[in-house]
Image (cartoon, rainbow, N blue to C red; front, side, top):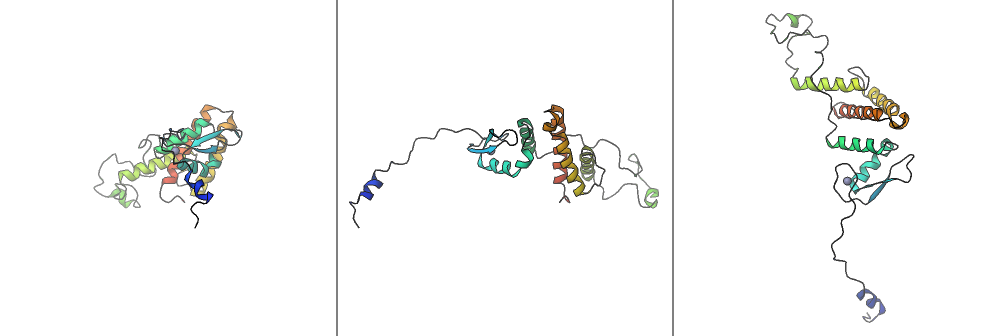
Length: 201
Ligand SMILES: [Zn+2]
């Protein structure tokens, strides 16, 4: 092997790695994210020259939901992201509203003679009916109401109603109207809540 070959000279004069500290780059534009950005994502329909600047994790998440975000106003996209941070908890009050339909309200009274139990097994304190379950059921009913659906609506029905409502309340379809944007966020929250429940597939 010839160590005086011009090739080795070339290798030797290669500059050393730059050890100066890197300047911090722009931050990810995902709501609440502090990672370094560096990945551009198109904002979509009607904004072909506009880009979000995200970190790698969020550019992936954005791209996965691209069809959903495309054409949404920046505010709506950010509202959705902020909402995702809190796990899409419903913002409506839970535990209000009427008692379960079809169940006589005993007002907390005991049922010593099991009268209600004998009336077809309905009514009366239900040992399987825990308070947390009732809160979940109330929240579920409220979410369904937000989508204009009855209790017990099928998954397929929920999905197609959601698509329809997103189209109808999309700010683009309403001249950028803020109130339709608020309604859209409500719809998204309700849908995401329903989606998080076991049995939704
Ligand atoms: Zn990020």
